Image 1: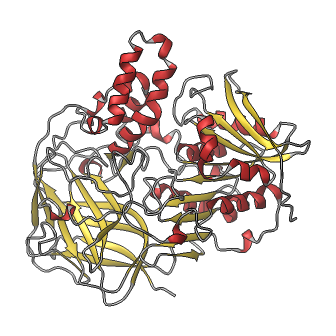
Image 2: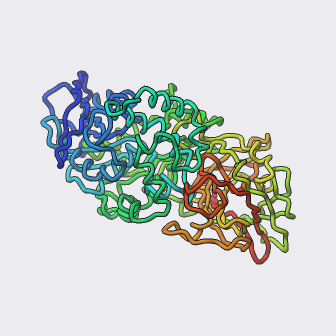
Image 3: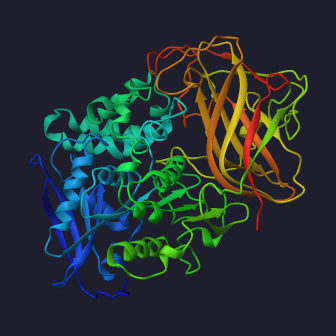
Length: 590
């Protein structure tokens, strides 16, 4: 290993550089590189969001800083977007195009032939898809805030459609460029442009669309979205591009960035664990790392997150005491692309921000092996409705207790209030917010532990084993983990949902029997949080979280089939025969 960190003073920028693909389609990139005759490792960014716009924020690595560190940065419009030719078909196109783009970078006279990739969200997804194709000159990747599967965690969760994400991603970020790209073929272009602006400025129109397939303008300008709705089970369509099914193909180490309030939180963690256990080479397994902060989608630069202040060390802000994600990423590249001996290999592979305690900690694995999975049983006298009810989380098994009953009316769903989200926060805020107003609703069951007599750390995956019945032929059950402070601020931590017909797997629907008690396992994702002494652990149970997830219409019909909405009577059981319990990974702090 060597220690070469020369600083570059002059930068050359080449605009609209053509990059040929194997099918003769030309993609275009901007190249930022040192203005010298030397050869430098390449950092490739492949984006659907306009390479010229991305050059400003550069998806959390400053291009000027990277070039001054001795890298060439290549920012490319993916196929069918902005300057690049071809037709945009998300995910499916990125395996071969990613391979070809990496190898083009390695072949340039300014390149050392070592290539890394970085970027967030879709720009993180393209890295995994390229890595699965095993381009010979790809040495490492830095996928940030991205998923492990484009069915579970990207488009659907627990069989429910991530509707808020679909609308707030597709309408403002994908469909408008599709409209502009088709401008010459649209006689009423100005009218369509005004309609698009109106929809984006009034996102609730999209959120409330029924049937879902009728989302305005999407069929014409983002037609791939209709395919996502048509494939509501995890079938071969989704498996064709799944990352979590193909970790053994990935031969390069990955620095995985994620956020506790990111919509792809679970995918980031799965990618880390999958790579550490299954990737193709020992170098990839041992070199893969995880960094999780108290962040929203793609935002290690901001604090507060939602309405909660996690402290100055949690974010990359104007203070030199803040978290510096650029340095973390460039240090990773220095090690893998330049061979710099910077001590990276000797450090623990996991760095995560512990909320509540509001400090960074390191671990040798995720979840921590020392976590003790503890059952907190749902208890009540049948009146757990709202925060004014009698719901309790208890370490003791329930006795012969009556079920809690509520009416789920999809005409009046429980509103989303923060949480793991993306992408248009003006219309659908995400992050940490006070849930006390949500918990006033009669259709939200609230189960609360007594105030804790000591700090209690929860680190790892959270799940709910729920015994419940519905009067409908199909419905949803939702769950949310909340940290309640003595002041009454109820901070959401993580959340989940299960669609009844997918309770036994999302490969195909399995009908339920109305009125019968079924067992539902709700995956709430993961968290890293210390419930401070005097705080309470709170679980919310309901049947909607809208528009974060689409409303289950309670009809039993297929997704988006019609606009009919039916109320349903829901019963949650917690007795000796049908106990329901929250499973928390409790970690003893050191």
